[in-house]
Image 1: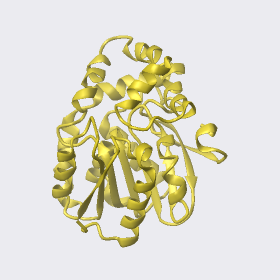
Image 2: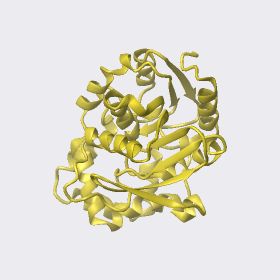
Image 3: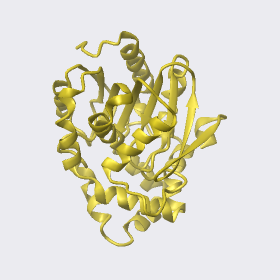
Image 4: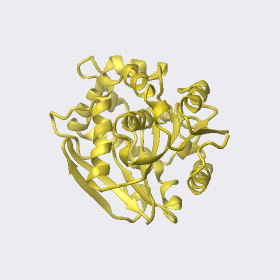
Length: 288
């Protein structure tokens, strides 16, 4: 991870399910980042540092398959429990008036957070992510059902030792391929750690649209500003979900991002930084 981020302090906090490692940079109003499946906080390596010039950026490695250490063996890693983990993290760091930024699976988790634990959240930013009926999206369904086959996570880890497999998988979510050090940081924990493979199996088996549909019922009661930044070239999450999110939240704006797939932090990080900075400085989530 040092090759991805450069020098900087890695901190950790012990929560009920295990240890969560994170990086923190900058001062001011807090921004908490929630990445998606099979990546870690390195996804935000080109977003958090420039934002940290004006804000306090907290970038954890959530237990979604590219994390170390693994969670405790008995840890519940269903979506509601992962949302509780985010809430517990905010409690442990005493974060208040947080801007919660979610991507991919992390966007679904963020939706569950604001549905059940909105007290510490002041604003919400969603980039391309699972929502409504698309949790998981159709292209990822084989991974969910595969997780019920004994040894699936091990087979996936074995396949990901091959660079072409890594790059093919990443091409589903980003037009721009990151360097080898970034890809290694994402896939090495799954390849090397049996406990991480156990965590991945739990996460995949538990994914269900019932959780995102249930969370969506609470959106009309979340009256704080929401920014929805959506890559227009996404192969996983349709733009109609972004439009539906905008209409469901009382105070939301939608920004379409050209030349980006699911991972805007990878494809268009500078534009995402500008969108978040403008959103936070204006405090006007209702601009359309």
